[in-house]
Image (cartoon, rainbow, N blue to C red; front, side):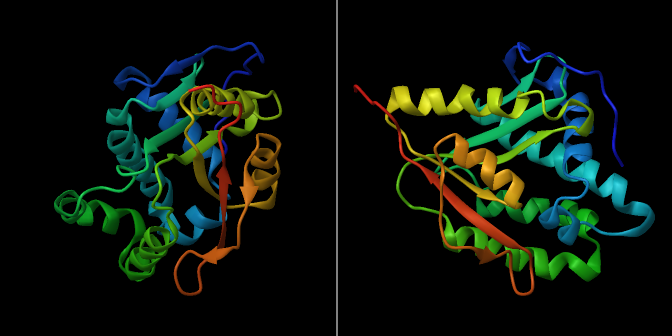
Length: 211
């Protein structure tokens, strides 16, 4: 599923993601993560996979956008969802309400292993204050134009102004190289749950803080 959107220039503006952007961002992220190891391992397969991916990203946007740290390109071909370190995961009561949605995304056969995967994310998540990048994606037709770097700089420059570290988990070596170019250092890999794909935790200390 590779949705082909309009090519965007490198000078494309970065704008806060709003409800009006939701459908376009979901379309772009579904295409960007179609072959991602973590998402492919987590999502139900077969005829329901495309709808499961759409539902998963719709849910992510609704969880992360209220933090005021979700951004997209003006044409919607790329997006990044960030959160403060203490609000990256839903509260227990909200997570219980989301269980039916999770089950629709994973299917019964994959539900328990994805739950264990999120347990692994919590176990390895740093405790000290930081900004957390949960998702950054560029749809295939708009890749190699620098949009991912523009989205990263949008927040890493804020991190530097505020003296705030940044954290993420890279799911591929290609993504890891991108983040390293922006000052993230790779830690020891861990599995997204038993038998799950390897994730690389990456940490970026702030640069040149004058605070």
